[in-house]
Length: 161
Image (cartoon, rainbow, N blue to C red; front, side):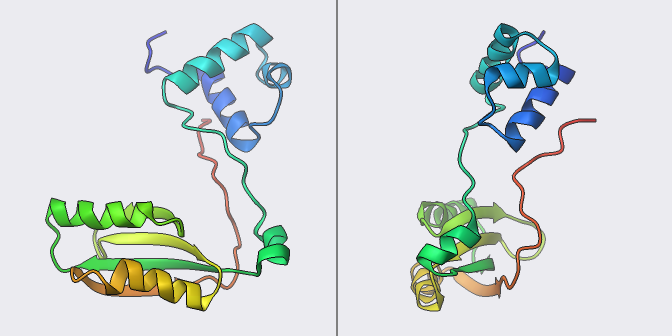
């Protein structure tokens, strides 16, 4: 098999792991009908090949809210005055370095960026906006949308045919 080629077993492994990466190698092997050593070897190849970037724990916002407060989720559109690559790169570098920024997307057409932010509360959001938007002379327009309900959240990619 070529290094960049994925077969059905690889796709089944990726699908299973993105839904629950805590499953044991033996259980994973049974799920995709291969031996445990074959499964381990394939998962290692998928990881070394970059198809699996990292394994993380997805936290429950409802459980966190009981301890930390409900928090504030914001989707923010950001338009810059100057869109030269150095200006886009500079804003992107500042945005991705900020802990409150969960996702940063360059988009087109429309705004230059869409950010997903998580703040403790509105004063915390204001501090974030001061740091990322107000202090940057190249930021022309910011439009924030505050989440009132999360109807769906997943990190899973549709990989199976």
